[in-house]
Length: 429
Image (cartoon, rainbow, N blue to C red; front, side, top):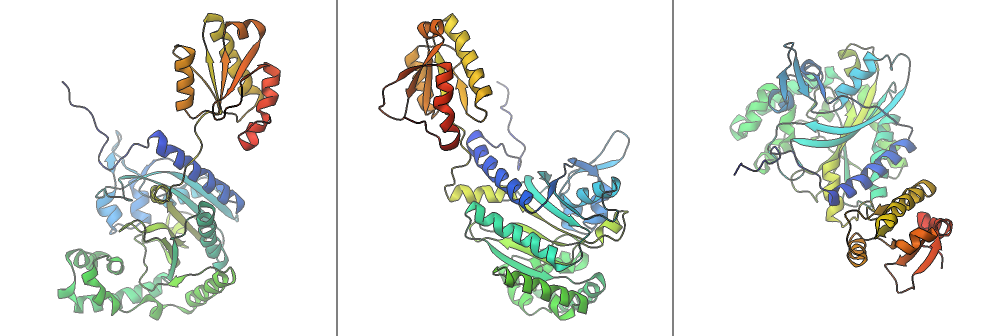
């Protein structure tokens, strides 16, 4: 017997029961982004490897260890996208979307990183990203943060907290990096293996260590806030005032850094304690130099990415039901002519009542077995078409969720009877 094939490690199937929850989440995300004027852009899964090494940074963990990269038949190095911002900037530059224009864009889809799979962290994971181009002030930073706050409210998520920081402009960050590196070298014996490696390649990432034994060292480390340039300090102060005016609670976290080299000034994370080690559900910030770095002009930009896998886990843990998938009406039939009429009836109802979930029984069987199937599918009503109904162009409607008597109706009367079900899930008596 041949070996049964399994999914690739860290790349998971989303089965129908969980897919309903995904659909509910994605619908809310689309609605909230539309409310703020963000338009969708669809981006390819594969980009040139150079795009990510130039934008994310050649000495980051993502580029050094986590990307799925391969040569194509022409010898070009390509990569499955590990994040979405770089591809969005590339698309905007390529298609001239940023010439003296403000753009508010969003995208969604799979990202890929070769990491150790665990809850909330997979090798294929799903993100929604939002990017705002052409706006230099802290007002758009606040807007992006407020989108997250509104989304959590719409989803009913309570355990989500906001942390913000500023990384300053590159010149200020370089001064801070030198001072931080000097300090960390003085503490070298206390650093864990991962921090020692990062010390040589990307010392700011040492601040992101989750090792409890590293916390005394990090607590005593100099902070970026001590080295901020005046413009970045004013930008951060204004952002804080905007968030306070909106009634949004936040924590100023001077240890907050992002694992991507392109960030400048504002960085933020929405974090939760309900997912264990993988507590970040949304993260973003400002990246004013990235457009120019990838061949465009001097265009200010800011954005965020939301980890949908983690939000789905949170919603499932809270018992969120997800999108309704059960049919409102289940059509059953017996006999050759009745089967013909039943399918015609189902199509008529779908055409006359768009949005009404109509499922037709296929595969034959007795009325009793078909009605059992309708009940298992969670249908509210069964539309029964037998030989008599087929001859008279009628249908027998049975309420599967009450003891009301069944009734025989013309097709037109059935349409009228079911119209209220589109709005409230029940029909008038």
